Length: 221
Image (tube, rainbow, N blue to C red):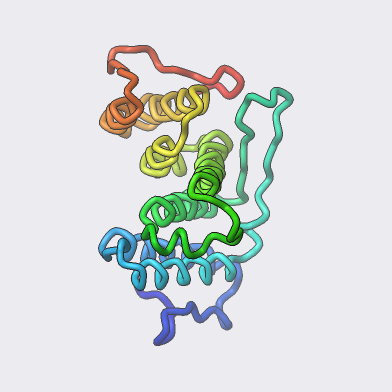
């Protein structure tokens, strides 16, 4: 990927203009995602190493990534929209939240229980805490998908939306994911039916391909 990194994998950005750093951070994140996919992250030492890399990556982000504009809509039941100054920033942050989801759902059980901050918490409260973290990252992905409606961003949202959908239990949030995936297929031409089927099977809710798109009317398609 031709990344400016040192022997420990840290990015070397001292002589690079902040605007030129944006695509570098996307490439660096893709490198971390490849590690998540290709390594056995069920092994604690592998998971810990990749989690550390992702945290270091996030701490080094320029302000363009961490200062988006989020519009809180008047209806509290409606997902907010998040906008970024560039398409690359939006794609990168959607991938970041997907990476966080992948790490959370694949965290070794012994490591997960050992890292709980509250020693008095039982197993149920620990898993509830995990679900809150998963839901937060999932809703961030949905907000980016609603806010950044250009083709340049939408064509990369299929996998983040799929993994976000796997973490959701609220029926309206699930409908939002299905609606967004159907909009992507209609507007961008990227096939999303297989991911809609995967989610429907996992949720135990059949969704026929012939069904009309399920749109969130507050956002449109």
